[in-house]
Image (cartoon, rainbow, N blue to C red; front, side):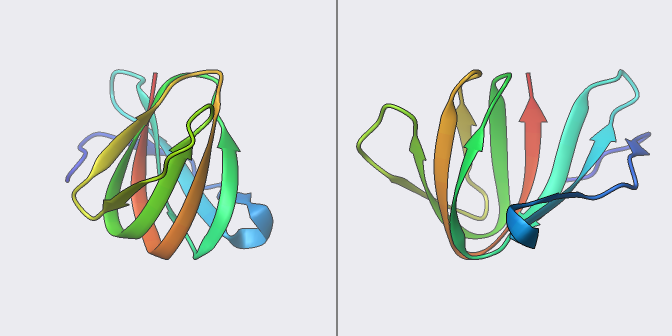
Length: 102
């Protein structure tokens, strides 16, 4: 995937002692996105707004708050997370992703 005319925030977002590292970028229309990597771990993320996670490399399992079941995703897949909730992610192979907000 290619994004044109973007503004990159050069400050890295580092979470969970470096297990997740991303950079925020903005499209020409002001849309905010982030791109990063999550290393093998089991982590819990909270969301303010709805998110769509595109998996570009690696493999993971995800459980959305309130669900008992896990779903597996790999390169080429995406998953949606409602706003104002949490999701658990078990990264099985280092995960390269793009997150779309809102």
